Image 1: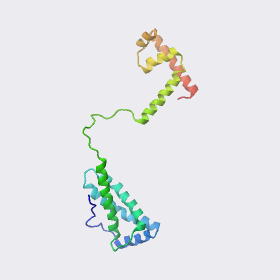
Image 2: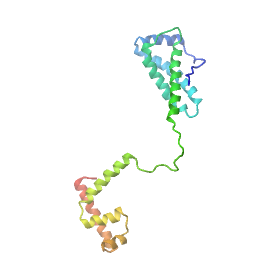
Image 3: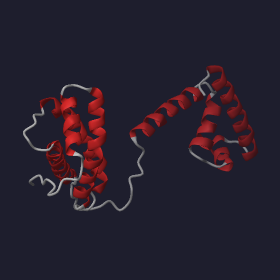
Length: 198
């Protein structure tokens, strides 16, 4: 894809732009800032016009305009006036950056044979780490409890068994399971506070 330059450059005071350019090339920071303030709106309009022609690429305009300004700052010390307006130099850089953006964007689009039917609900890496840390803390807390309380909490809280089901396994009445669960949780809180785990 060849880089297209605009047929008609946007209007700018070429003499003022050329004067700012010569000062900026000599290293005048104030002139460089003024030059960028003058050039950026023209570059942005150009990028928007070029990228809007291609469906889905208009949102790259600000990024490409920023890249043009950075490339301009890098190239400015080597700039030589060859009798053409400075704006044509700027739009040459802009044309190449737009072409690069269009090439890069098409490379980034990877076609697939199928689209997943639903979103991936699996936990991400951060959530996996948090879950692992929390599980280790819970195991450390549970290890501080007597075996009977540990088993009871594992059945009721972790496995989600009812008081009847837990009582059947442990040989306790449902009421006794609820009381024992309350006591085990109270003890767990005391251990957590003593160890400052939560």
